[in-house]
Amino acid sequence: MSVTRADVRATLSHQPASALRSVLDAAKVPYNADLHDDAPGLAHKVADALWWAYCTPFGYTIDRASLDDIVAHVAKKAGLAQQARGDDAWAALGALTRAIVGQAEGGVALEDVDPSTRARLFPSVWPTLALGSSSGAAYGVGAVGRVVKSIGATPIGRVLPLLPTVGPWFGVVTRGAGVAAAVGTPAAAVLAVATVNQAMGTNYQRLVPLLLGVGALRAEPVVDAHEAPPESAES
Image (cartoon, rainbow, N blue to C red; front, side):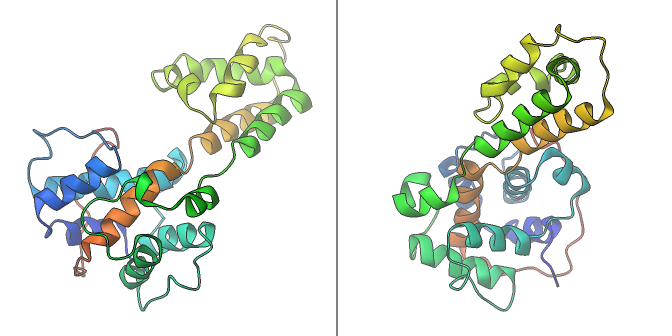
């Protein structure tokens, strides 16, 4: 049976609060000390941060990813799929953690992962740039620009230019919005939104330390977890 986000929360809630803080600190995940002052609260934050780092915004919303998916994805990108094997996702995560950082205890920082493994894990921004370029070239910069500009007017849009996979094309597209502002192409709109979704997808720089930090805890899994009330990914 797949290990859900609720399962991870339940399992981590039995870990010492100090250990969970070390996972968040090593992965540079900000958290509110007042809201996350005990093991259950910190476990909620770790699990949510892990899923948020792995999923696109759409993927996080529908919440179909499992720990099995996350471990298999990272293992494949690291070239360690054969080593990351086990009877369940927790065992596979333990094997992956040992293969990358040995018998690490506590939080795992990016610096703890050897350079060659980091090079395999952190993708180039070019696929997103290519998709962004295609949306402009195939359907008109104005049409795409109008959609992206509307996204840019929202609170989340204000941080888009700061993201490394978005910034290189975001300004170019929005500055060209006036070229053909009257042109409306549904395909362009879909492609523009898809580009933003992809660009805000897996955050390996945060995902890898979180995943390996959880693996280093060597937690005993808790079964039959029930989903807790949802919490904002940014809380």
